[in-house]
Amino acid sequence: MERQRILLTGGRAPATLDLARQFARRGHRVFVAESVPQHLCRYSRSVQKSYLVPHPNAAPEAFADALLQIIQQEHIDLLIPTCEEIFFVAHMRDRLQQACRVFVAPHEQMRGLHSKWEFIERARLYGLTVPETHLLTSRDALQQLPSSVRFPCILKPVFSRFATKVAFIEHGEQLEHTLATLEISASYPWVVQESLVGQAYCSYSLAHAGQLAAHAVYAVNFTAGRSACIDFAPVEQHAIDVWVTRFLSAEQFSGQIAFDFIVTSDGTVFPLECNPRATSGVHLFTPQDALPDAFFPAYLQCGHVLRPQPTTSAMLGVPMLLYGLPSVRSWARLRDWGYVMTHAHDVIFAPRDLGPLLAAPRIIWYNWRESRRLHLSLLAFSTYDIEWNG
Image 1 (cartoon, rainbow, N blue to C red):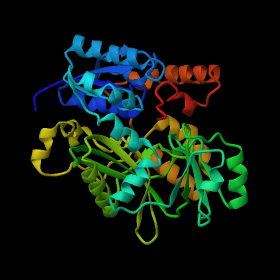
Image 2 (cartoon, rainbow, N blue to C red):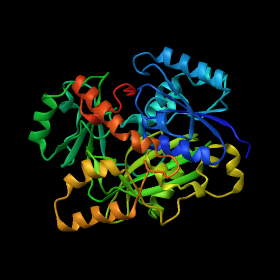
Image 3 (spheres, rainbow, N blue to C red):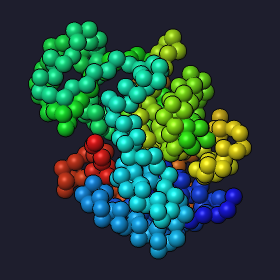
Image 4 (tube, helix red, strand yellow):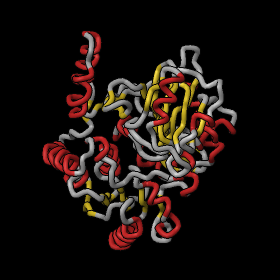
């Protein structure tokens, strides 16, 4: 494949660092645009140059102008947004595509997939299984709910991340009390969703016009907070594969996309939410898998979907220490943690690219200092300048 000049946004994310390394290994020249000064990709040998750009959610036009300037200056062939700044890139997609190919779906499609309400409704219309979900748009939210609401249930904003604002509701009185304390409006809607019992899984896929090019599924094990996975091992889940294939075909989706699922004891697949962007599923693909090839439509000509090798095992080492170890509550769980720590590959570590690992203390210090200054948690700070809430 002809070597290209690639611009990645979201250089703070381990997934972006992984993509940068994989693209570089395939002979492509990689550039990064990021809106915080301290980030992993800045210190990677796989990155030709890292550019500091305006905060997307504070200055979206200036952000787009900066990307366009980089594209023109570095003669970029392909722009791949990776984190939540992808929604701002999608909004400027037509303008940016005049300068290079942009690997992102149209903005309206992205908005519907990001919405925890619209996504479920789309899947329902496609005849796919979905959990019982109800939209709340006013302070009189309780009156909008049918009497048949199932408990326990989950209450969450339509646009949110990391499950930071999720409330678990056991009964009607608790729901009534919780709703009375929340800001709920048409501009800040919430959903009530049935709480399902089963195994949690995540998927990550690449698609072109609704056709799968790459696909991986992994079980939720250790997490940072309530939902962000920090260890990764591929699993076979045919029912999820079928669900994803049908949904992407119906959507005619092009881009990176990820889903969170619950699979119940009878094997039924229920989607919880969609993240139409890069996620940690990237870490399941090794350089030998040649994931970068799947970002180009010509890859579909090979006639098969790229999947990770079954023996792959990866982790985020620092989060496994900061979040994984404190979550251990039993000897069995401690053994699980020890197994991951001794068998999984730390995605930040690369023998020929030690810069990101050596810079990790500096990056962590910067994030901690700035999160304290802004009175945010570390998780909230990690997306404060790129969050898009509809």
